[in-house]
Length: 311
View 1: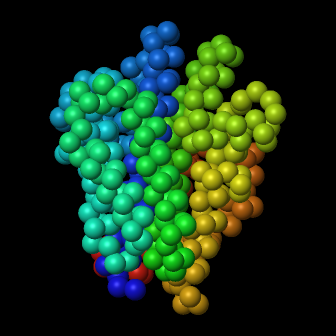
View 2: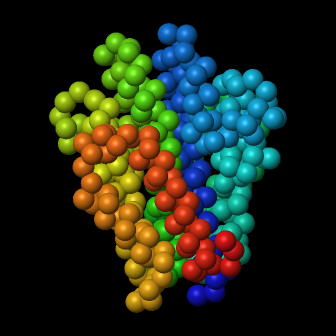
């Protein structure tokens, strides 16, 4: 496979996943902001959303004070923000257009239809549709692309690069969301009913609310949320699940060659496989999650060096 093709497939997977993750972050932020306004803390949630994405400086340069309307526009339809939902779908579509001979027609149609629907959307259109309805639509479009990829494309190297981008982006998003919200909510000192709602919103942001209750059968506690989203091998958005798949796909792509990216992925995968939440808590969850972000960034750069045209 050509390096350029591998790179475009990889980033198509990442950008479609990023669009969904942005929708999930905005969804949980809006829900927590509604809850927070009852305690005069609603505005802090919009600051937290920008903090998760390391985007507050870019936002302030263009929008000034942080508020709900500005953050929603910045992260959804802003044409100049390279990480807005609009920009993610646009970039994924540009990559997919160059890959027409390498992807199935269903994959192309799913991305192209999403782009045509969002291309001319305005803030007024978004308000008319409703933010939650729009975010749910973005999630569905991302699911449709992944479903088309899984069921209509050859499960060859191209499929592996697409899924590799998906799982690396997902690991990055889960890490940022958990790090941003964990200590804020764990130390909030709110009443049990509010804590249940807030932690429930975090779990819903990663599609894990029902899975949590199936596994733990009790009240939602911060350390159990962390355990589910870091170490559980069956939770599709946990770090363990993501890196298990990253390691497997890299093993397939390396095909017996001793490449550094495979070693890096396998090493970190083993740490998660044999990790214990008590030891992570003792080390400090924030420090551990910062290491995860560094590892995701380092692994992404190494994959570029080993397989692609750019670094």
